[in-house]
Length: 104
Image 1 (spheres, rainbow, N blue to C red):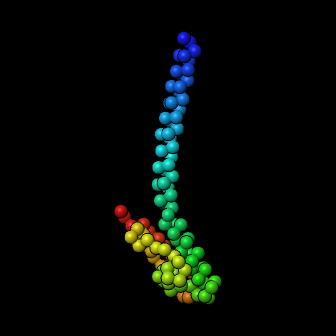
Image 2 (cartoon, helix red, strand yellow):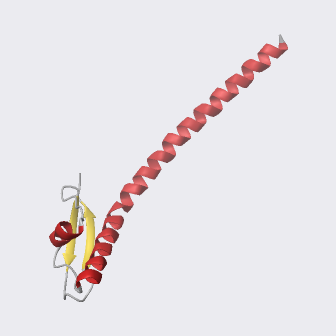
Image 3 (cartoon, rainbow, N blue to C red):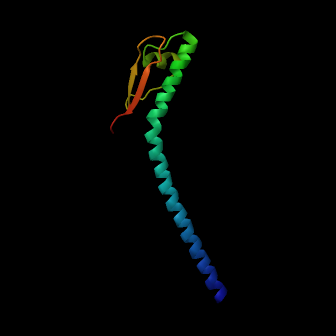
């Protein structure tokens, strides 16, 4: 009798531990996705800047606009989700780039 009762308690505690791990996993995944989405505009900005540097290295001047990068360097922009601010002051000066997420 004692042995079967102890097995039931062990199973009960294992189920509780599994439930706690499952709840914690869902909670931390949610935090991960929120943080990942907050950092997305910065990663897009860095991708644009890398494409600008690649263009400068290959052509000797920075691209005149983002459309040029899209057409010639494969940059994919999501105009439905983000605002892009791209300002160039001279063909030999790195452009000013900012990316902002649009309100949903």
